[in-house]
Image (cartoon, rainbow, N blue to C red; front, side, top):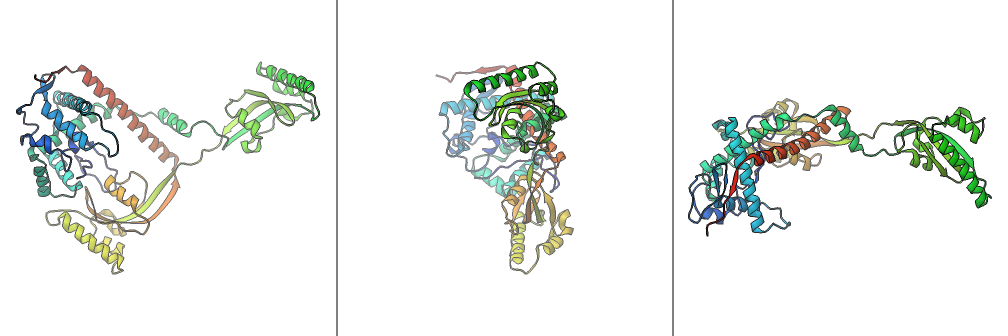
Length: 460
């Protein structure tokens, strides 16, 4: 099966994060390769966008006066069925057809909104998308067209699907993505939530204590009297009486610092004390708590959160040789040349750095192809995925990306703590993705709710 990764409508630096401006949809993925559409496509060689109703075809829904045919629904259902995750149960055919119809209704509504909003897609954007699809599937233009023909799809129909996808993406970018804002307060709360409830590790406490000793040979009656005394002290402390004065009354006027034990790491307190004060605020009272020594009443005087353990991230140091394809250098020729470079490197006939300096068509060439230390998300996905699978010292096979053909070597890998700035940036990205998903769902439901949709019964 041919992989459809993503396509973009603008150039990117090889080292910059890839902004996928066009999400992979069920509709478009199904346009390429091995997806089991033979039966649906064998019904007619006409384009699914030709608007010609076929024999035994009929209208199943009308969306703001525009029809959706049964043939379109069955094609969409077949695409979904072919892409269903292996090993998971598929819905019944009727349920899958209903899901396919809903997808087509939403697409129709959004395309209508795009037309009304003046969204236009220039031919150059479609050309670039087509070229990216070919490149990401390691095909040249002629091979892509041959594959489309084999799958019963014309080039014009395929380009029309690309145009639809670019149109929908631009509409969503304008109507949804442009409105997403992540506030600094949102990031603060996100980081607090990620760290979860406070734990004893890293907490410093200053507790004041009233202790009512219980001698080892005390009878049950004596213990009850002592417990009642401790409960009286706790009740009066909770009522707001001065804790130091209560210490003098219930313990001794010789107890220093009003019973305060001083600010110290939680590890230096008995676990009984820590477990019962960890969730309390400054000024709160805990107890009476029973220990082997007696009954304890505690007041939280100070509580400080030590620094949270750092968030670790894996960084990779890699280098590459990039050959950009052109009319003079096809992808196949570039792959063959890099395969020869790999053989020369592994046999010791040449060094990676020397070949990179001489042949690489990238800004890193002067440094022997060295890309420096990088973290997740700094390279385009097709490059990063291969790089992450390599061990230090290991060379990749020639890799095709949207920028050309690469030979990659990982030279080192390490785990390092994220800086506070990097941690906040990761939180910002996570929040933005969450907000985008929620906003897109709301926007799509709103569009769908305002559309006039008439369902049609099949002919008898």
